[in-house]
Image 1 (spheres, rainbow, N blue to C red):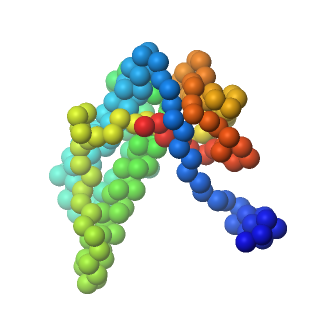
Image 2 (tube, rainbow, N blue to C red; image 1 turned 60 degrees about the vertical axis):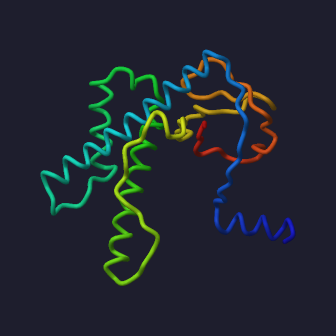
Length: 182
């Protein structure tokens, strides 16, 4: 495909998703902060699982909760648990969105199963473990809360200093919409 055809394709669809992996070189302080942020996101995920299970126990015939009902709960949790204020609000919103997506996938699995299709098994979202799950956090990019400082530094939300990364050359010309630090 020629460059002019790619430009036309981009103009027609207006969005091309691309995943770019960068290596982060954290200091000891940053490593502790990253573990705290990922732990807070795991805490919110587990609260979503608990909230949905209680909701299902009280209202067994209703649909599972979705992100529209979980986001107000998340704001209550942020008031109740002060350590959640360390995280970027968009990161906690992404956790709720991922949880809601996993519930939708589970419902579509049971719907397909009822209609005679046999897709791969998708069950109810499970609790995340500190020992066995990936320590990661992320969020949405709004108001330039994540920006590329230079070729080897990226400014992450909730961090005062830019963080050293492998190379940001692949990010040139792209608009960053979401980020995930693993």
